[in-house]
Length: 113
Image (cartoon, rainbow, N blue to C red; front, side):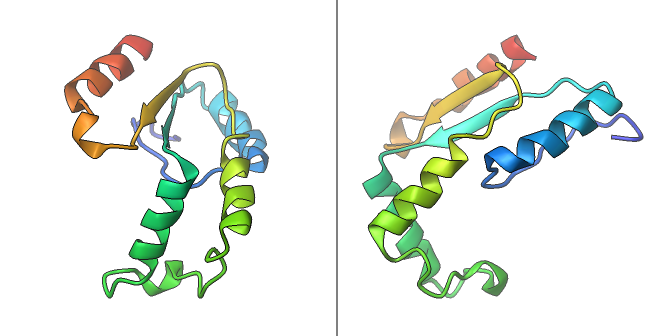
């Protein structure tokens, strides 16, 4: 932000993250946009468990079963929906990857920024 470059932050942000980010955005006079990828929680949980058990999973991100229980997973996932920087948001439904239109997403982003 100090040098004014465009960049992307990617994470499972929660409400507490927004205060820190809002301050930085204000201090450096940045425009921001949240792109939230959402799907049915049962599908998301299944994907999470599948990803957790692959050899390609970065060991620093392995949860060691912390998210195996669907109720626990749901509570933690819902916290991510509380994250809000401003009203400049784009929600992308990832339930069926074949329905995602990348060109449409890029156009939406360009219109919003």
